[in-house]
Image (cartoon, rainbow, N blue to C red; front, side):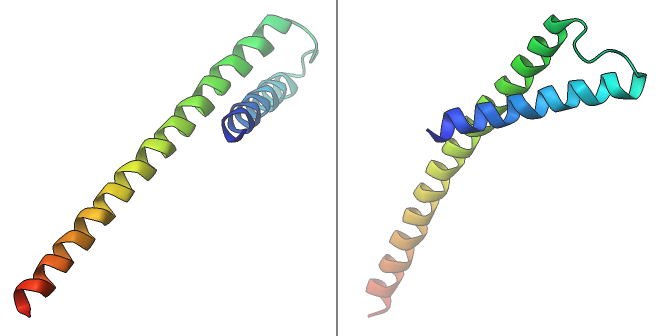
Amino acid sequence: MALLGTIAGFSLFGLAARFGQLAIKKRNLMENLGGHALSMGVFGYAGYWAYQWDERAAVMLAQKRAEITERRERKLVQAA
């Protein structure tokens, strides 16, 4: 569910960015709906990428923490 929420959030941000672009130009917001879809798709993909990056980072951090804990335990055993 978190993946879907991340993608939807980034997609909605992309839509808001597209509306912001058109509002600055003072153009019709419902003109060229394909541009809205493209913007939402690009930002949605960025959301998917960010989610995957976060998941990989969490795994790497867990592995690193396990390595550090193992090294500390070895040092304690050697010191004792």
